[in-house]
Image (cartoon, rainbow, N blue to C red; front, side, top):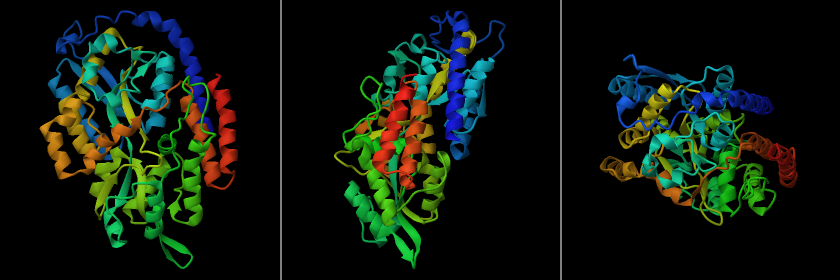
Amino acid sequence: MKKRWASIFLMLLLSMSLILAGCSGQTASKTDGSAEGEQAAGSGEGKPVEIDFWYALGGKNGKVIEEMVKEFNATHKNIVVKPAYQGDYYQNHAKVLSAVAAGNQPDVTMVEIASVGAFADAKVLEDLTPYTQGVEKKYIPGLMGNSYWKDKLYAIPFNRSTPLLYVNRDMLKAANLDPSGPKTWDELVKYARALTKKEGDKTKTYGFSTPIDIWFYEALVFQNGGNILSEDGKKLTINNEAGKAPLKLWSDMVKEGIMKNPPGEKYNAWDVAKQDFLNKQVGMIFTSTGDLQTLKSSASFDVGAAFLPAAKSYGVPTGGANLVMLAKSSDEEKKAAWEFIKWMSDTPQTIKWSLASGYMPVTTEAVQSPEMQEAYKKDPNLKVAVDQLEYAKPRPMVPGYKELQEIIMSELQRAMLGQATVDEALETAVKKAQKTLKK
């Protein structure tokens, strides 16, 4: 399945480069798109401009997005935004690329932050600089690392996150452990041992679980002082101690029987880990900031959020998705699209979004607002991701990283399943990576 998605992405990327090269003249006139006020968007005939917005969050968070769009439409009579859920990030990305190639793309969509470079490099995205006129300065600096490609602004933060450690505080208290959770890798192992419960040969409760996902792996590599790619983005730099340490930690915990490796690929594994946590079959998990409100509202126990435990230091990649404008939209649609992007990410909306979802607010003003400060006092869990930004790094976003992360995850899983040693898995990943990064 991973190879299939990677092949689809590469074929579409190549086809887009040819198609968009011939269409570049259609989108040249856009310096007048500053969109200062609502009159910047609207048809010359007085009819509202209709734009399509494709998003990639389902469930409770998807419903919140639909409500936000309704509010925008009600307060912007000259614009009609038509929202459409397109599945998870992987599915949405594939559909956007297919739609661009077919000429029926949306005007605004979510793009997972590590893929912004690939989309921008393929000339799928519109440079937002002529529209923003400096408004980008209001966003939290730590969230802007994945908004630029080749010094141009292509994406605005929206549903942004960091990975967090979630703990069942009731379970930790019963085991005489600090309910705030482990602070280091050694403590993570210690806590996982104490929380693991067996009945005969069967494990009733695992101490810890995490999807073997690139996002969490990046975090643990950063914590060991490493990087995923070389500074020039041309080499995979994980076949070293910093890259091996996370895989050794996880595989050793699985072998000891204190960590569950959730079955399934990509977000299916995430769903298994979260459900095991809610069912009290796992005491601690790694998952996203964006899962906070859903876990809290669904759990029958006290849910705690904490920094990912540290190795040499704390460290996490930022995550989530940004809002982008599609380059092939008309000038009129682009002006309307910018009004929508600006509104969705503005302080009042990002406060509502954060409180409803658990994702981070994206403006500095929002974090400092009375509403968020009061919310942080009532539920300190909400502030953990914001505080963790002090140790955050942007995700790699060279054009080939979308395919490269599939290679890395595949090799991580091989090691976790005992099909390769840690050294063999990372050596293979580096060899395959060089072919991908040279394309």
